[in-house]
Amino acid sequence: MRKEKRITQEDFATDSGFDRGYISGVERGVRNPSALVLERLAEALNVDVSEFFDRQKAEDFKQSV
Image (cartoon, rainbow, N blue to C red; front, side):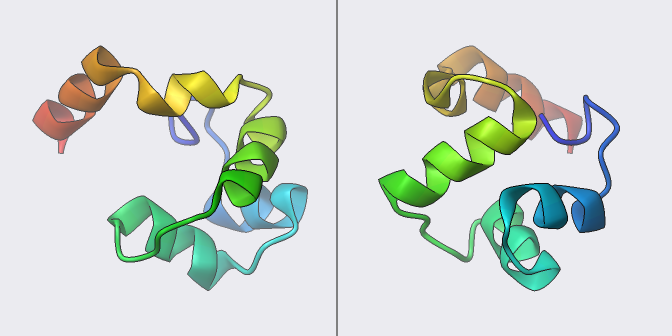
């Protein structure tokens, strides 16, 4: 979603209040963010948390990588 919105990791980190390294870890799947963290990330992306759990979006993302 961050890339779709053309937001850099640095800007996303600033907007969400996290370190860029933490954002990178979440995106790579090596961090397990809590529900509160997901809420902050969703807010920074201006989306609903439920969009993180959209199965079709996840499949589309896997195919694009």
